[in-house]
Image 1 (cartoon, helix red, strand yellow):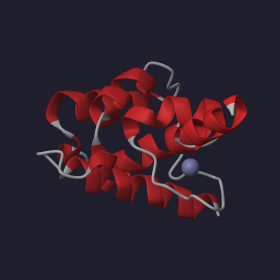
Image 2 (cartoon, helix red, strand yellow):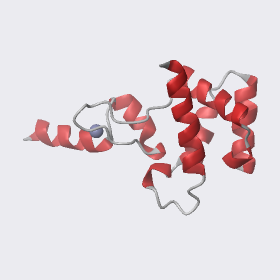
Image 3 (cartoon, rainbow, N blue to C red):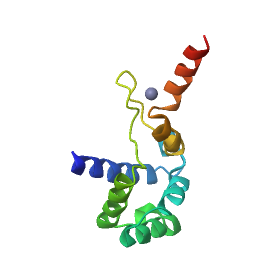
Amino acid sequence: MFKNQIKEIVERLKYDASDRDGSNSNSRGLYQYLKDVHVDFTNDAAIGSAKQAIAQGISSLSERQLITIAIEMRNNEVYIGECPNSYCGETIDWEDMNDAIFEEQCSYCCYIEDKRKRA
Ligand SMILES: [Zn+2]
């Protein structure tokens, strides 16, 4: 389970980093997110890898470096791949990840819930 999630984060980082023109909305905010979360990393290898990713691009990282970042994201609980609501399961964009972790659901589900509360 743990191993699968690390692999999922590594694959996501690689896939979204290759989306240079931002055609896939899930990749939006990736580098900004990395800048925001890496300041709380405690593992030196993960901090170094994140700094290299920010300066030279995620594609400059080795598989091993990507794994150190993924483990740190998992340990710090700063990664959520998809909306946990079983009826939704929407992929969480990097730019929405902070909110999604706090709300424990995606922005669309928050919007629907808000609407229902106000009705
Ligand atoms: Zn949702």
